[in-house]
Amino acid sequence: MKRNLVLLILVIFQIGCATLQGGPHEQAPPVVSAESRRLGEIFERYFEAYLELFPLFATQIGDHRFDDRLAINISADHRARQRKLYRETLDRLSAIKIDDLTVRERLYHETLVRALRRREEAAKFPGYLLPVRQLGSLPIEFPLLGSGSGSHPFKTVADYENFLKRIDGFEAWVETAIANMREGIQRQIVQPRVVIERTLPQLEAMVVKDAKDSLFYQPIKRLPGQFTDAERDRLAAAYTDAIERKILPTYRKLVTFIRDEYLSRTRDTIAWSELPGGHAWYDYLVRNQTTTDLTPDEIFLLGTDEIARIKQEMERVKERSNFQGTLAEFSRHLSKTAPRPFASRENLIEGYEAIRQTVTPHLSQLFGYVPRAPFEVRTIEEFRERSAPSQYWSASPDGSRPGIFYVNASGIEKNPRRASESLFLHEAVPGHHFQISLQQEQKELPRFQRFGGYTAFVEGWALYAESLGGELGLYKEPDQYFSRLNSELFRAVRLVVDVGLHRKGWSREQAMRFMMDTTMTGESGAALEIDRYIANPAQALAYKIGQLKISAIRAKAEKALGSKFDMRAFHDELLKDGALPLNILETKMDRWIEQVRR
Image 1 (cartoon, rainbow, N blue to C red):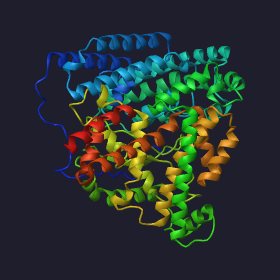
Image 2 (image 1 turned 135 degrees about the vertical axis):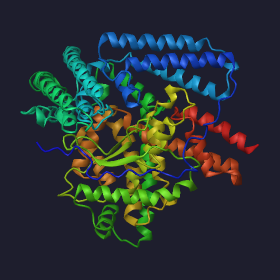
Image 3 (image 1 turned 180 degrees about the vertical axis):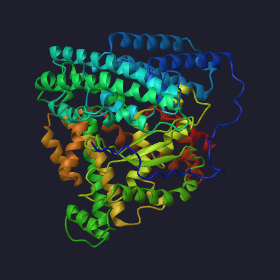
Image 4 (image 1 turned 45 degrees about the vertical axis):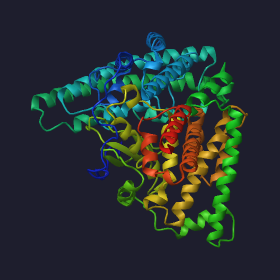
């Protein structure tokens, strides 16, 4: 089976220049109080325990002490250990004398307390009974980890041996997942049928006839040159054996269970609210993903308002072009008159590299600091491109792995496409790569904050970053600017369809039709997105909610500060403490506005 696993064109481009690189707070730490030291010890104790509980996360952030482990995080024992850690840490934090802390320490204290309380709340809902889906589940992500394209390193003999041990953990994880799903069947907590229909082909693709065709054999095909012949032979034999005796039987077992036992017991309904206790469960997911107290009904109405506002702007663009016709006809007109699209993965990547070259010289106008970490542009591997949208995978803090901007190029040979400027701004610079890398490079942050994230902040920032294109030398072509508006419209539509699907009784077809009619998305694209919202409820709400809050904070700062408002200083302050819940972010920025105003 042909696999497009490796980047076709490797281009590593270091962002920025020496005078701009680095974080804004890399000076010597100030003298701290006894209570501050106590708080720091709580932070470190918690994070050390968290890394041991979640060794894959440790690997992802460049801590390789646990690379031989794979947690069975859906097991009863592991879930009990999680709850114990969260409760013990909250008890320790409650004993801290808040008045003895600095302003920033109070910020981090409040952030961690909030996060742990939300995790305790999450434990009330049986998510462990739904461990397999078409994205974001271990059986789908494990092949990337084992192929050498993910975060697990394959540089030393020990790295290779460590992954063999992780394969043992994967066997145990799948056994637990099957047991959990059987319990879910009994309790009527099962996935919608469409989710499993999306997932099954991805799992079946892992069952190959020859071990050498497996994604898990890819590291053997790329053994480092410094390995001895004896080491190479031993590892090749060990990986062949592990694939034949462990990986393939495990995937066969999972495929057989899902195809022959689980699929027929999936539910015809798609709303999360249709699950036992699902109404409260969805409300929690909304609060958790948006980091607000907005209700689903409020979000639905906000979405309809945003759709109307953005469509008005699109109409103005059409009028300025003196085009007579509908927005859909205008969109098709712009596509026809735009520069020729790319028909190969190689050329598409080159198109994104050209955008990078345009954006980079303008960054210093908007930011005082930019990250050191490089990033690469790759196309999503063929085995998962049918279900995975374009996405960003963060760089490792130790510099051993660059950030990766993955572009979905599925079917590009038959359906040519252009490099999207708004997508680049969202996923790469100054979106995800910029924000996440800058956060991870702030070594003075508590580690839980340095490596943490809130979807509303992270995705909200990335969507806000799309609005900066004009200041970064982009959106000069009408097609690209109109595309940017459609991208924002797309996120506004999510507010409506996610709540529609999970709270208002919308069918899958109704949600698809609404998305297609409103955003000019094709049927296959709409189906991919709607099925994502069905599988991962409320996550898609975070983008627009976060962007609206960040934009509102900026507007507040501009109005309050007038001539004192400095865009570089605003962005640096917004990003310097890493991802925050939106209410905590707003309080922090209000303090900054008052400080600048004085």
